[in-house]
Image 1: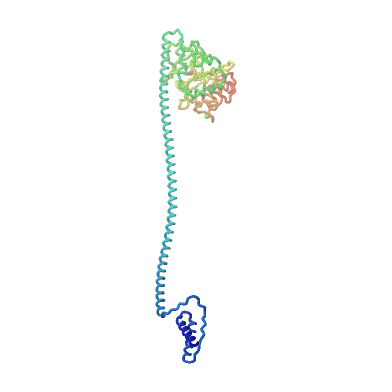
Image 2: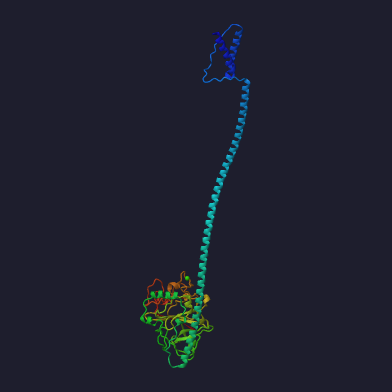
Length: 481
Ligand SMILES: [Ca+2]
């Protein structure tokens, strides 16, 4: 029994020496126990009970190597640890580098995104500019087309104008030749048989002025509608010449064509010249004022008021429309055997060659005849709009023309009057209007005297019958004083 205990103690001591790492306190206790046991070797035998401090489980490793080997192993482990730490540091360095790279990649991504956005923006802008340029190109093409159209139209108008000019020239030439032809015919007729009366009616004044515009014809229709019904004989005689007669007639008689037999063929300066030449028969004569190369025909009134009167205007049946343009009033229109207007240009040249007086002969629907004389009458040239120059009034009709003295002539297409509007437009005829009052012998010929109209547009002489009375017969005549 004692031997067994000794072996057990010895074994325990070995175990305690082999486990230096088990705990400092236990080692110290073991050493104490050992020294105590040694002490007991030399003396009395003693024993010690060793109680394990903790329960050991599993296998117990018993190292039989020496402490040096352990130290070497520890050193090796430490070296490995350092190596691993170095590797770890290296890896960390690499990781850091990779992190920087990742940051850089992210920054690059951002930049790429930004650039993409900018490219998209630039692309949109480019598209917009392209569209805008296309629009501009379209607009330019449109303007070019418009310009081309305008140019084409201008060329067309120019071409039409040239054609009209040619036609006008041809008509003028034809008119001139016709006038000369008529003149020759008249001379031949007079030379062949001075006792016979020619049966060939002369060309009417309207044929002398063929260049009436379609606009005027349209207006003629308009005015004709305004007038009351024309008597049947007017419809029959319009444009048709009555049989020729040598019977002297006053301007207030029924319209007849009269080509008097003359001792000389003319032309004469005016009807006073005709009378002085011994031609005492009233009718149509060929005239040519001094300083004027153009021939004209006019009715010479040789029986009334000592004769020698050149009739410049006549109204008697409403067969001719007087609502006409400036050019027509300038050249003259109507029928010499009926209603007509001699023409402002002829009047200008006639009254330029001497001092003339004017007689206005009027007749109402009761047959009462009156007159208004002005001791001086002439017109300024067209450059002054054929301004009226009148002398002193004398007569029994009342003075309805002095109001218009020194006034320019006004037509529907050339307003020269003092009124805000155009008197010729309201009163439907050209006249030397001051304002729209007192007289207009070129208005609408209303049947029966008093008329109803929106405007004062009848053939009226206000100082005779007022403005709303349209006279039956009217004639304006001039004669040198
Ligand atoms: Ca006016």
